[in-house]
Picture 1 (spheres, rainbow, N blue to C red):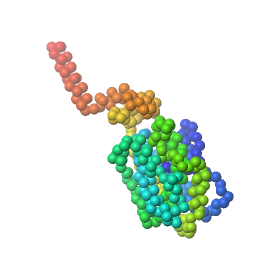
Picture 2 (tube, one colour):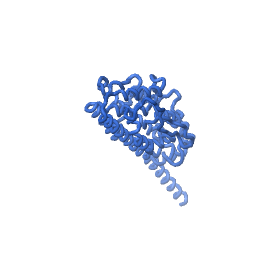
Picture 3 (cartoon, rainbow, N blue to C red):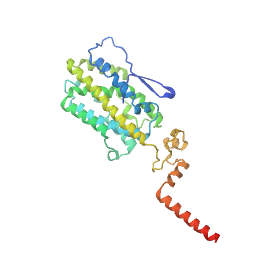
Picture 4 (cartoon, one colour):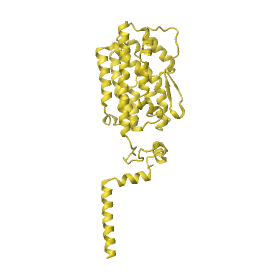
Length: 313
């Protein structure tokens, strides 16, 4: 998700994200944190304005799509944290290695088990856009480790900022449990104050011993990371537009995709965990569309017509 620094409630228009930071009198325009902040503003804006993110912020997110987004995050963080572990002693990255505070893989595994069950590994696959992102992270970690900073900065600072907005939106829109199953990814149990941790992280960024050329390459890589994220968002948006009908566990649609699906009381019951809930009208329509049901109905009509004809004679 896009990295943001402050959030505010957006009423009927959904949550809104703003790119504002607390000023620090000790920073210099040549500090890496400032170069990243200024150098990725345009990418921030483009990522925030992808259709997927705009719909998400307004609570227009289907559960199946949220599951796919979580899957993309799982593969992304597996790659990122594998390369971070590989480079934990590299001077170009070591000061930013905070596995206890930041690593998301274990939290994502909990989310995957919640959404897909204990056999979740057999039910997921890495999408094309996510695979390109993953491949780039592995390339950087193994061949240009100084650029790994860009990917860590883009992901984790976003998770600690705008990610917290998305957590609230997802929990409300998808009616996820108040015990926070399904959104463990957004919960940083070992960070008691996100703002102070982000200040520490930026200070560590600025303390890296990097020349001007390397800093410029890191900013360029951060923008590249944003582009990878936007490709994932656009891929999810395309998939989301194909999810016209929401389905019950048995695969029977409960809504035809017209109007606000959340206004259907049967759909609301289903989201709340009532597995037996189902919209009678849409269930009947869906059943009639089944070939075997149509065959049976046709046979019944034929028999009825024959009986009627015999009676008239």
